[in-house]
Length: 107
Image (cartoon, rainbow, N blue to C red; front, side):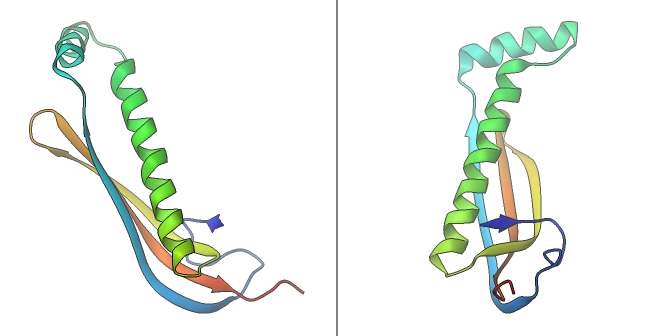
């Protein structure tokens, strides 16, 4: 599956627009790690536990997006966008969306 942030796939023509596809996930760390992260934030620097959590979450959401598009018969997703937001005090959401399309066969 081709997944691009551009409105088209370079050197390919869109045969059919299938529609919007979207996926999201809300995650939180456990209390013990939140306390350690809070202490780390006082000293500054990267909080590796949160970096890992957000990386895993983005990969999970991207896989969901791809699976949703594939279920609808798509072979590409164009115009992909990602957003993150805080939900509550210790939770974050990752949301991705794009347009599922079928591409014309290559010559």
